[in-house]
Image 1 (cartoon, rainbow, N blue to C red):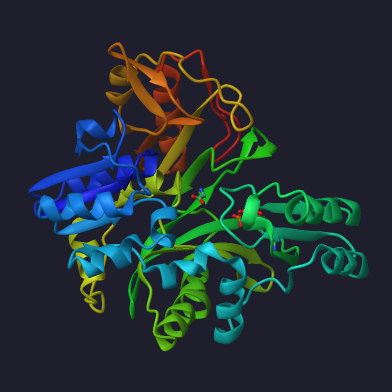
Image 2: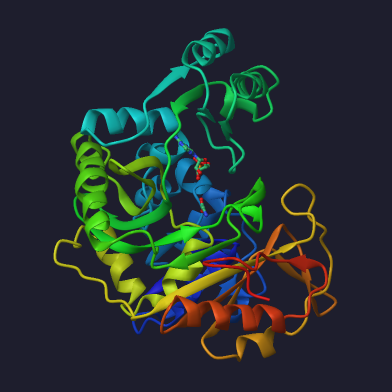
Length: 422
Ligand code: AMP
Ligand code: GLY
């Protein structure tokens, strides 16, 4: 099989690495990729949002399967364009990707399917939204309806904060069109878990669960980020809770999407809060998480390529994925200044030495080559992962590898998955 991965981050590096191990693979490409991905796939200089160029490339190279990493190309119709060209795509159509692209749509599906989620109201004018905040009182969660690259949610402790978020999103245009509609939700509490399901439109197969660490700094302080580290399996998610989440959240959502004639194929990411009343849905995403993917794929022992193909063919009914025992930890190394103003261009050394340590594997995100040197080219730059017999061993190994990397321009949290390790 000839496979094209779309994207350029650590998640796509992990996907490409896992696909490269498949006995079914003939050749692997990645567009646009990064220097790390170039060690397992041929990189192609086409942007992840250039859908017509991606499909033309896939046609010209007789690609059998397109594997999209990020959500934006899916929301923009990559899977639809592949379908028109007769190419399999392991991701949802634009109609099904609304589950991530429009938070109000997810709420509509949740209501129709009886999925437990936070109570909410939806507004397209700021004055009514502010009035609702004053009527309800804090705490409240204010969310932009559209895609906002992780910047569209404010958990407000006071009514003033909630009103300020409404103004920033709806009147000051801080998020552009994504903020013209807002949702205001009740605040839920409990441990958060990222749960993944591989879906074929009808069936859902568990694809693992991980705990993300979203704040930039240790002790869950500092600004929200795309994710500074992940541990898998998610410690808080017992098998019973995972089954409850599939029964009450994942399968009802799939059934509702199919009933509407927009079946969901691909990776469904349920952001859950494990509340005292059971798992509740915070949001759906229509792709793997980053860095959750980097923590989960090293635990997968089944062939990812065969699984993605079965998802495209509607054949997940009897499919079962196998996993290595033990745990996995992913620690993100970010450029100093991330997320506000990451400093790029700083040189990174010692990756080979770090990757040779027991259980360690390094995925690259924001990197590029400059005069033969590897330099930082984004906010999140590397994900250092390690597998171990248990969480403690995986953490010790991941941090040993992180310390072996010589990159004064970067930083990482030392408390991914437990108390800070020196
Ligand atoms: P999102 O960008 O939708 O992933 O939301 C970012 C973060 O906001 C989530 O990971 C949660 O920690 C938090 N959040 C979102 N909705 C709620 C809610 N209803 N109650 C409490 N926290 C929430
Ligand atoms: N790490 C969270 C996400 O990928 O959205």
